[in-house]
Amino acid sequence: MKRLLNTLYIMTQGAYLSKDGETVQVQVERETKLRVPIHTLDGIVCFGQITCSAPLMGLCAERNVTVSFLSEHGKFLARVQGPVSGNVLLRREQYRKADDDGISAETARMIVAAKVANSRTVLLRAARERPDSEGIDSLNCAISHLAGILDGLRNPLPLERVRGCEGEAAKVYFSVFNHLITAQKEDFIFHERSRRPPLDSVNALLSFLYTLLAHDAASALESVGLDPAVGYLHRDRPGRPGLALDLMEEFRAFLTDRLALSLINRQQVKGKEFQKTETGAVLMDDSARKTVLVAYQKRKQEEIRHPFLEETMPVGLLLYAQALLMARYIRRDLDGYPPFIWK
Image (cartoon, rainbow, N blue to C red; front, top):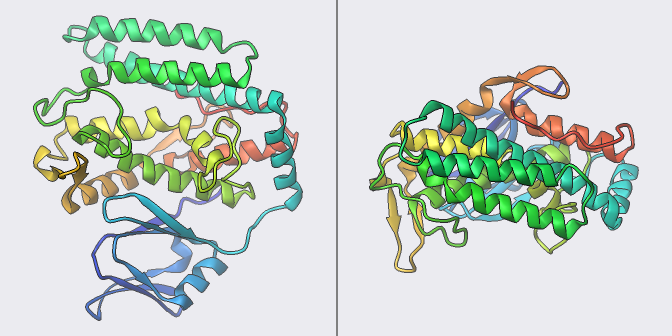
């Protein structure tokens, strides 16, 4: 199994990243702040006005270290990577399967079923932990509704029906998401999912975490030789990493949603660290982003037993494991794609 490597997040505006032998050197106002050996890194994520030298980007490309550039507030801008890796035959088979409506629908059905199951598990745990809470009736109703959607996904469906199930499940899940917030209720109120832009503090936190997850999903797929742009649930659109978004669906509730709730309920992030702009968008400040990044890295280091592979691994390798299973499925080493279902 692959070793879990680190992701280097750079948030200091004006920082300059360069190559120093076999290390990444980080300078601020010409003063060296950090040196990190390249062999310990899986990726570098730069927020805002960060500059990278050409020799460093060449080294990263050579060592398969993806460099991603985001806006200061976490909006994805671009990524730099080396030559496409992996067997060209694998990618050709990936494209053939994506062009087959039946195979696409079946693959998407497995992914959506895992998403619904994992979302339901989050609600079930909340209901067990707080059986006398104010929103328990709404939680139980949503849990039953998601169970019904899961039952409907047991048999083959056309792709549009699968998408409909995914949309319905997301609506049900987020309709009770506010009941999962047990602290700082005045500062963190969730009404509905809003993306571009996030219109409240909870959505701002979720969107930032989803950006981190998307980066990790794309890197995992590239590492096994798959094309992150060509998906089955999310169809082709210029600039959209369709397969990375597919892979993310299995992990939104389990990894990022639970982490967002933990950060709020444990008061690790504060309402004052979020500001509303003139356009209505809500953004996190540097302090909150640093807290989130540290918590995300720690969560990825926790260990879990993979339900299909039956191996204990860090949470941060789950995306890689699923990318590997996706590749095996596409190569026809597996009869079906086994998604990650949290138990």
